[in-house]
Length: 305
Ligand code: SF4
Image (cartoon, rainbow, N blue to C red; front, side, top):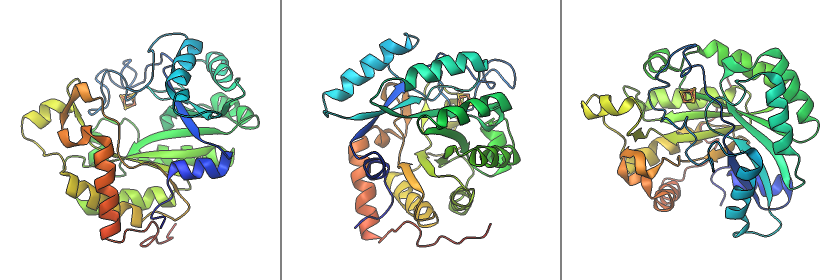
């Protein structure tokens, strides 16, 4: 029984073959690091800009794509790819630079879509128009790191923009036909289960097509590490995480694609929770919990907006 709308099944349905992501590093920075809004970054973000799995950092795009393909093609023949700009804020450059970068990534025949991780305060009109043009060629997806709807948590993590900015951005992207995937972190300090469920329910109502649910990781090179080490907050247990995930998934609409149930924290930098390093085992435990507790996406979804 399908308990939630998983990304892999959705991709196969949409593109008719196995699709992999090519995680690419465009060599960007972000306003939370370059001094525009701050220099320390979001409190949970590592020096890699939340993109530890981008290959061949700072190599040319072509080299990165070749390397990523080499890793993946051992797993599947005739696969398709999503060119995924993951690290930092991937719309944070002059539009001409972005156009050259995106076009180069989308050019190969086996690249079926472009996915761009960014912030809602970093998509000016000319970039939106570019995304719109490219979206008529191949699907363009934009990933937004919302993480929470709660202002106190947003201030604590130093997100740097208000919820109204996210709302306006989603409206503009959707009006232009761009698909949106929103990131949410479970286990932020001082957040109760109810607060997390409110964030999930809100994202489900916000008109986006996908969600990435992620456990709060404490990484060695992120500022969050000092608060964790000072005992200001605990990280989640696997049991609690599975329960919270189940609660979120029940509150999401049935057709929302679940891109991720847990993150890929960089193991070498991971301080806590250490159980999260074994992703296969974690996913197995989550699925076992979903079976046992009869978790079904949409079971508690209520359309209120
Ligand atoms: S999470 Fe994104 S916006 Fe925040 S510091 Fe890292 S790269 Fe910048």
